[in-house]
Amino acid sequence: MKKYFLVVLCAVLMLTVTGCGKKANQVTCSKTETEDDQKITVSITADFDKDDKVTDASVTYDFGDKETAETYCSIFKMGEDESKITCDGSKITIKGLDTFEEDEDEDSEKMVGKAKEEFIKEAKEEGYTCK
Image (tube, helix red, strand yellow):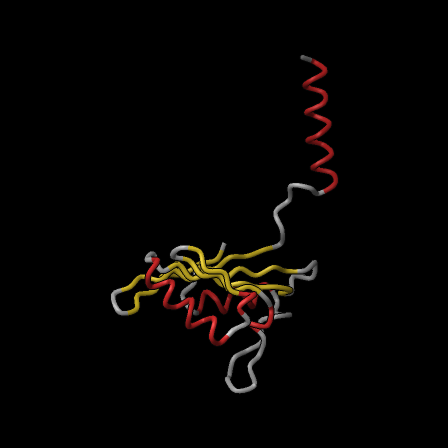
């Protein structure tokens, strides 16, 4: 029993020292909206580098209804690279930086490279709750 305890203790110490098991530097901001009596939960997840700048981001829409999600999935796939879109039941996830980079035709601000504090502040201003 003592040997087993020592092996487990060593494994825990190794994981702690090497950083394995640590949660990635990531923030998820979510909010629920209602559109045409349909509740939609939108979650934006951003990954940050060691300098707390956005390196990658994804957005997930949860429609709570598979049929509605399938309709929106078709619409999203018309305007985006299909390899970045995952449709699973009532959820649609769009991954990749291109989705969030500045669009020349719109007044959208580039998300990539944005500071963590600024990302969270802007999300909260838009009604998101961040974790």
